[in-house]
Amino acid sequence: MICYACQSKMEEGRAKCPICGFPVIQSVEGNTVEIEGVRQMAKEYMKQWLGGAVIGIASYSYVVENHKLKQDNIADIDLAKADELVVGEPLWSDIDFTKVDDQGMITVNAFMKKDGIRYAYELQARLPSNTGACHVGVLLMEGLKARLVLGNKESHTYSQPFSLVVYHG
Image 1 (tube, rainbow, N blue to C red):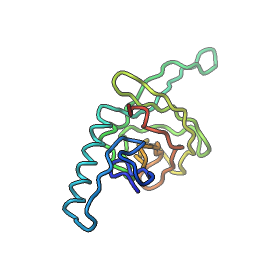
Image 2 (image 1 turned 90 degrees about the vertical axis):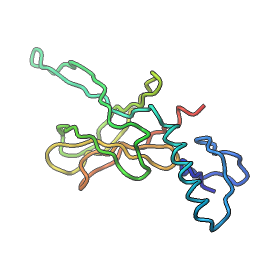
Image 3 (image 1 turned 180 degrees about the horizontal axis):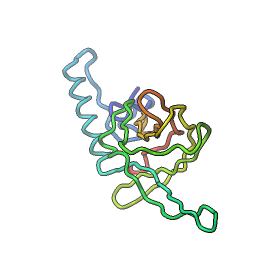
Image 4 (image 1 turned 45 degrees about the vertical axis):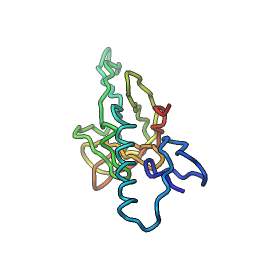
């Protein structure tokens, strides 16, 4: 059985999804109007559930002091409003990031903010093989998980997944 809202797999006989809390709605098989109504209700439920949450990354800047690099500033960069994400479709930021290395693994410090609370994630990702600037996006996955997407629409890589469930009460 699959949750209509977050697409998580769950056991038969549940009254609601153990991940997002959406109620299990028994529909008449083959009734496309009823099924479409349940899908629309689930979509609105997810928008409300994710409403107000923002996903982003920490950006670090450096200065040279005494011939050494010294961290100068850390700033949060918002990438996406969680309720605007669609499962399986990356939402890209318009910000260009300079790639320091050509390829290899990097650590990206991501966050999710909602209701004044900031949850931090330290994510591993491989740099994409594209040349020039790198964009960062967010990909919503089934089961209320997300990944950062690095590169561009033509050539990109993904971070390890992180959970958005921290807000379910």
